[in-house]
Amino acid sequence: MRVATVDGLLTLFYNNSTEAWIKDSKQEWDAAAKTDRSSRAGRDDNQDFESFNVSESCKKWKRDCDRWEQIIIVEGVTVIPKWIFSNHDSIITIEERAFFNCKNLVYVKLSINIRFIRKSAFHSCNLSSIFIPPRCREIGDSNEECNLAQTFANNKNLRIVHIPQHVICGAEIIHDTDLIEYYPKRLLGEFEEEYPQDSDSDYDEVYMEQLAEYEAKEARQNQDIHNWIKHMNAGEEFNLHRACSSYQPLLEVIYGIVENKKKSLVRAFTDEWTALNEIEVTPSEYLKANPFACSELEFLRYYIKKKMDEP
Image 1: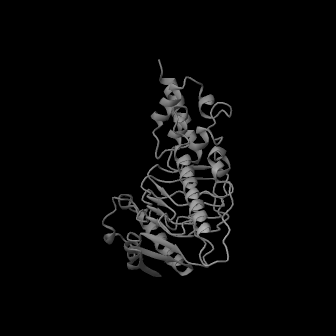
Image 2: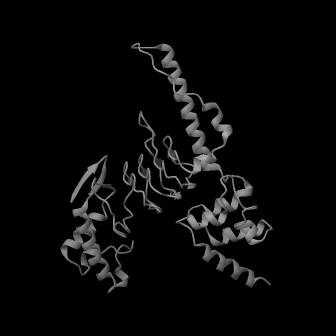
Image 3: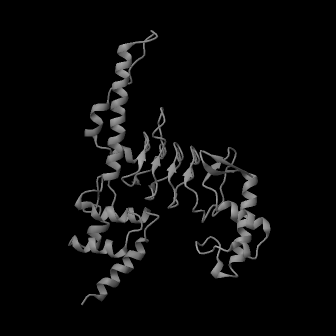
């Protein structure tokens, strides 16, 4: 197993040999935890793990994994087993191309502690939705000179995307996705010209001016796209969409919005004629896709109970 400090973060380089050690240690930890619910592995209140009845190797795994801040998937790894990194709340960075071209990856739930998702981290996967938690600071590498982030690019089915307003985004994070097809044409209008052609001379002043103008327009378009994603449900008529796509929405808040709309639950929540937003997504679809929300069934039970309790 290789662990090193990369960009100031304690980093695990995950490979096939690492997998066996993590898997064995985690199985031992989980098995021992079943005998002592008050010291269950992975819980925040489990501070005294040194006294836990497990091997020294398992304790070393626990010490180490509590310190890892980012994980780099080494080339050659083809499968990451289920639960292998569960309860690793210390992870704050997903590195560049960590899941690049994982074509069978259809679902991701990010840790609340994620701060940075580097460029191309989920490029060419098969995601249909992604919800960025509120502590995230940056998607892509916006400060790089060549900053084509393309973090979620080429996820052909990706339409549902929730990004908090404060998150800084690199360029083309949703390039070649279903969502970008809904980007308003009025914003695309000014950016239909071709990339300027270079000349044979060592320095062409006209070309440099055209290039600078092109890059400035490209930067404006990227900023427009980011603002569009972040604010597409900003209107009052989309307050239910906004609630269902938020981080840990409260059942009573969703219920209150439905009631204030003075519509039936179906018309407010799921109806394709009355509940669609700009990208043709209903509140129900947001709730189903949101990994930080209750299930749709939980809300329906809550809704029915509230209605039955009414005088």
